[in-house]
Image (cartoon, rainbow, N blue to C red; front, side, top):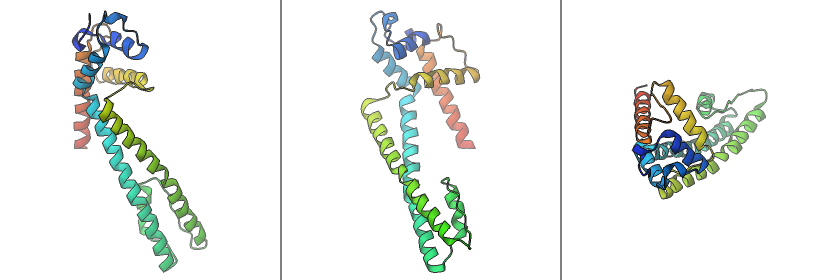
Length: 192
């Protein structure tokens, strides 16, 4: 009976996780193995960190872009031209703003379109907040992209030099590889 990550091979774990084929566990508890995998690999904290980072970025965007639009409208009203030096701020959020003094109405239209396009980020923020709440409440669960993400992770680890034999590597080793790789990536990103 397989009851721990150190007893479960990568192949058996994948069968259980993606095919709900628990026969190879010999009556073992997959939920317990999955929880141990999440804890050892630090995936739960990584997902939580990524969600919190996305939420922060969305909140910043939702507060900043409407202010930029409002400032442009105010500047235009007072000076009959936009504050051109602030156009680079819009670029940071994926908006390309132009100014043609011969056709000022085009600029007003651009600002109105920016304001409309930005409204979708409020819905995205709500979705991320719900995901974070669910993650904290229920922990890491299998979703429709899990198989793709797991196989992609195996391939990435292999390219980075980690030796993974699906039949010989156990999930404890795999979890620690994931954790080590993730920590090295985060360390490298901090130094850049």
